[in-house]
Length: 106
Length: 118
Image (cartoon, rainbow over all chains, first blue to last red; front, side):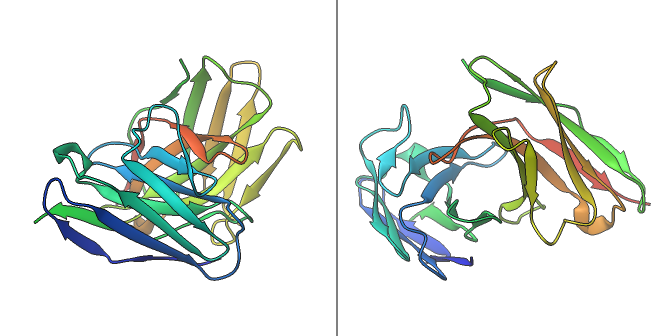
């Protein structure tokens, strides 16, 4: 299953909303996770089952979608939210990741 | 608190093999799998494979099927990744991650840099 993220880079001002997209090449139900990765760190799980926040993740992160189209929304970007975000499907082996969206300061 | 602690950096010659370990502590059980993901310099995340405790078997990405093995050691709570016939394209940071089935990869190791160079 090929996961395609868009855009590759998103330039956003602090306090603004960011909307990231992820598309699957075939239906994956809601078996989708989102991760945040900062330079020099391991990825961190944000969202699983397309819309459920992982433990300790603030409500400003929200996920939606099912089937083949998914969205991660960051409602009001804080300085610590500028990072690379990956989607990942776990509906079928082999698990696959999108290529990532870099959220940068505008 | 769950922790995954990986072994240290490795430098290997082309054609050789590498074994990376991932020791889990705090909150592990047979309901969780350990997966291996790598990240080449400046690149994205690539899944290599994972061990599924319920079935006692591993799943691998087809790209690595012929030269990767994931080996669990229940007695120590350690999972090993073995990758054979290394080339420079295998230079990457290798992460282990715990899979809570249906819940994604909820805990990650710190990463192990494997450098393949002659």
